[in-house]
Image (tube, rainbow, N blue to C red; front, side):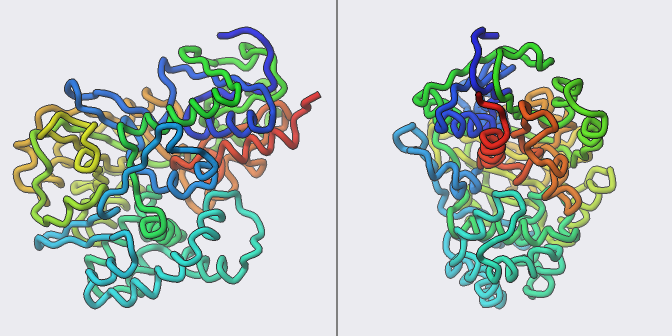
Length: 474
C-alpha cells in the first residue's frame, strides 16, 4: 500500500468509489483510491471470459442510469473516450405466440405497437417523460423534500403501488402487462410487492428519455473514463491492495468505503459504538443472481425478428409466469422457468466479438447464496423464444452467486444491488445516518446507500458531499 498522507482515501473502485473520489478532488482535496483487485471497476469490468477476442461484461452491461445520472452529465465523456451506444430499441419482451412487445425510444412508437393498450401506455408515460429531469434527480438522490410537489405526488400515487396492480389497472393485454412488470423485476422484488410500480415507471421513462445504452468496448470503458478524469484532477489510484483493517490505511482526514456494510464492520467496526455496529450487521441482503456469458457462432435466432432490434431482452412470456418466478425466489426457492434478463451487446458493438460471431449475456434471480445450477433452465428459456440458440453456443462462462461474490465482495450472496430495496430499506440504507457513521472520519459510499444499485455514481457523490461537510479538514 502506498505511503504518504492524503486528505481522503477511497476504498473500492466501482463507479460509486470513483465518483466519490472525483467529487472530493474537484473540491481541492488530495485523494487516493485503493482497490483490492488487480484491475479497477467493481461492477464495471469487461473480460475475455469464454474465448479469445470475445469481450464480456462481467457484471453490469446496460446503463440507463449512467445516461441519466446528474454526475455523469458533469463528465466530458467523449473526450474521456466513453461512447454510449444506443440500440435501435431499449427493450424487447418476446411472447410465446411468436410476437414481441417492444419498448422503443419514443413513447409514440411504443404505443403504436401496443394495439389497444397504446393509448393507456401513452397516457401513463408521456407526463413522466416530459418531466424526466425532475424525476431522475429525485430517483437518484436520498429522500428529501422537493420543490416539485405536484410532479412528485402524481408519480408517487402510481409508484407506491405494486407493478402488478398498476399494470392490471391500466392494460388489457397480458403481453403489455408482462413487459411492464419485467421492468419492475429489475428491483429483484416480486412485481406484486408494493413500491415496485416506481421501478417500472422509472426504467420505462429512462428508456424514452435517455435510452438503455451500452458502452463501446465494454463496461470497463466507464471505469477507464472515470479513472482518467480522477487522474486529471491529481487523484491517485492503487490496485492489488486489500484493506482488511482501517489502521492499515495511509494517514487521512476522511476515509470513504465503497464496500458492503458487512465489510465495513470487518474493516472499521472497532471504531463504532455497539449499536451502530449491530445496525450494520442487521442490514438485509436480497436475492442473488446466476449469470451466463456465451460466445456464439452467430446472432441469437429470435422467433420474433423485432427482438434483434433491442439491446436488452426479457424472457418470461406471460405476466403469471414472471410473477411466479420472482415470487419463488422471494420465498427462497428457484424458479422452474426463471425470469431471464438478457443483453446482446455485439449486435450493436462489433468490438465485442470476431467478425460473424456474437456474444450473449444473461442472468436470472435466485435465492441469496443459492447453490442450484441454473444453466439449463436459463438456456431453455432462450431456446424457447429463439429455436436453434443452443446450437450456436461455442463456449459458456458460468457465475453462481458464490462466484459473483468472489468477483466483488459487495455482492453478498450474489446480491448485485448490495441490499434488498424494499420499502423498509429503500430510503434509509444502511442506517438512518445514510452515508455517515458516528466517526466523522469514516463514510460509506457503496450501493448500500441511497439511491442504491446501478451505474450512476450518485452514492459516491452524496457520500463525498457528506464528508466535505462533516470531516475535520484542518
